[in-house]
Image (cartoon, rainbow, N blue to C red):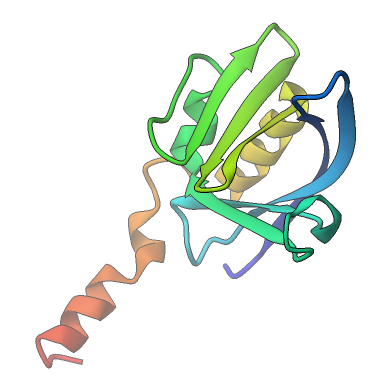
Length: 137
């Protein structure tokens, strides 16, 4: 299955200035890359005026709905019963966004319907890659 799952979400950008800013974003899941999720932000919120893409583990997003997760560039944690906070760490600084947990759950449900948790191996192409590596293909 080569279905791409795009799920538009509204995030609140948490800034150092008072208040938050509503920003559209897209969560994307590709069965061809079954362990990863991508989140794309529009050009108007980036420092250089281009769209910003972050790629991180689907498992990280799932775990972060229940307990703080992540130690690297992307961190996810619950924020009350209805919200989830995501932090994106880069050399330029940290961006924090808050989104509705229900939207994340809806997105994850769609991704797990496409590729169940623990069922990613057939989509990774490891058998084909190993066959090519050892000249059996």
